[in-house]
Amino acid sequence: MQNNKFLKIILFVLGLAVLLVFVLYYFVYEDIKSKNQHVSTLSNDLSSQSAKRDYLILTQKVIQNIGIDINRINNSIIAKDGDVKFIENLESIARQNGLTMTIDSLVLADNPEFASSSITTLQIRAKTKGNWSGNYKFLVELESLPIKIRVNKFDLSNTAVETGSDVKKAGVGIWQSTFEISVLKYK
Image (cartoon, rainbow, N blue to C red; front, top):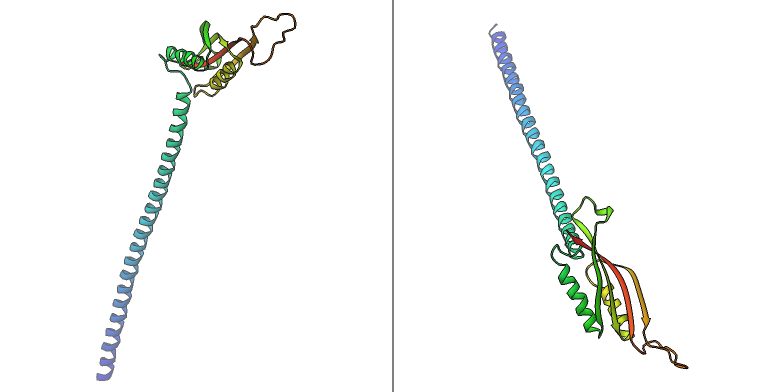
């Protein structure tokens, strides 16, 4: 009987120990589970923040590139009060090429394409007189200006008077160009 009672106590203690081990495993399991969930949440937050940072960096690069393009566009349009400076620049280019320039007309014309914007078109009709190469160089420099210029018309004629057997030759005599250009301008 004594042996039976001792066996019951040992079984009870072992059962209690097994129960305590299972309870301990349950708490360890729950702790590991909560830490894994916390680590998973932090990992998702970190990857989300990393994706946002990459997106912001990409957006900044796009904005910088757009900024450069916007500056190019703004520099290709005459400023609101820059029409006099532009005309003086045209006259300066003509003088540098040995030409005399007279402006026949200046017109500000609203273009229907830009009706809702603050851009208008400055239309210039002018004449230059000088040698053939000066007129040619003037046209080349006109087309290579940083301002967006549309050459609507450019006529070049020799104003020398033909006499008998004289034949007009390129580069000989006084040449006159008549041109019409359109330039975008801020209102």
